[in-house]
Length: 248
Length: 196
Image (cartoon, rainbow over all chains, first blue to last red; front, side, top):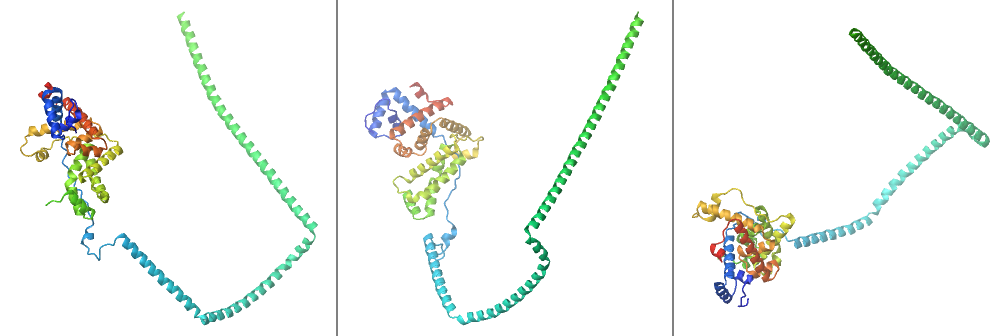
C-alpha cells in the first residue's frame, strides 16, 4: 500500500480499522481523521460494527469427529498384518502359475499312462464284440418274427389291394363317399337353420305376448284410474247441481 | 511440546492417523464455527465439518504445503458450504434457539457475567445473526473470515479468488450494511458517531 491516502478511500479505512496497513499509512490516516469529520465518522462506525460483531458466538457443539483405523491393524505383528494389494496380487499370480504348471505336468503324465495300457483296452474290446454278436443274433430273430407277423396281417388287405388296382372304381367310391358326406352336411345345416328360425320365432312370440300383457295391465290400470276420475267428476257435478238448486 | 500444523501434516502424510486426529482436535471448532456462521444451521455445520476433515484426509497426499494448512482447510470448508447451500437451495438462515439455557451461557461467558448481561448478549447475538442474513454470500464470507478467523486480506482474496481491493470493498460494504441493520434493530450507534 502506498503511503498516500485520499479522503474517502474506503479500502484504506477498512485496513485501518482492522489494523492491516503500513504504520506510515496508519499515521497519515490518523492525522487525516483528526481534521476530517467524514472519515472520522466512517472509522468510528466501522470500528463500532466490528466491535458488535464480536457478540456473535456459534452454539457450543461437540463435533467429536476422529479418523480411525481398525485396531487389529495396529496390534498385529508384521507377519500377521494384512498384505498390501500389490503383494496380494503377486501372491495370487504365483499360486495360479504354480497350479497351472502342476496341471500341465499331470496332463502329460496321463497321456503317457494311456499309451502304456493297450492290452487292457483290447481285452475290453474283445468282450464287447462277443456281446455284440449275441445281440445281433437276437435282433435278427426278432426281426424274422416281426416279418412273419406282418405277412400274416397283410392277408386281409389283399381285396383292398385288388380294388386299388382299378383306379376308376376307387374314384367312384371316393366320390360317392364325398357326396354322401356333403348331403349329410346339407341336411344338418338345413335342420339347424330351421331350428334356429323356429327358436327365434318362438322367442319373438313370447316377447310379443309379454309386451301385450304388460300393455294390457298398463291400459287396465289407466282405464280404472280414468273411470275413478270420471266418477269423482260426476260426483262433484252432482254436488254442485244440488247446491245450486238448494240455493235457488 | 506441541507439534506445529506442518509437522503434523507431514506425519499424517506418512500414514500416522493419530497426527491427523491432533489436527482435527486443533481445527474442528474453528471449522465448525465457520460452517455454522455461513450456513446458519447446527446439523449442517457439523456435517460440513466432518466432510471437511474427511476430504482433507483423502487429499492430504496432494497437499504440497504452498498455503497454510488452516487456509487449505478453510477453503475446503467454504467449498463444501457453497455446495451445501447450492444443493439444499437454502438461504443461510441462522437458527436462533428458542429458550435460554442460563447454565450453558454461564459456562460460555464466565462466572462473572450477570443475568442481565447474559440476556443482553444473547439479544445482541440474535441481532447480529439476523443482520448477517441481509448480506450477500461473498460479503458474509469475507466478514466471517476476517472477523472470526483472523485471516488477512490477502488470504481472503486467495480463498475467494478475487483481487485484494475487492475484499476490502466487500468488507466495507458488508460492515456498512450491518451497521444499518444493527441500527434498525435498536442497537444505537455511539453518540459520537451520530454527531459526526
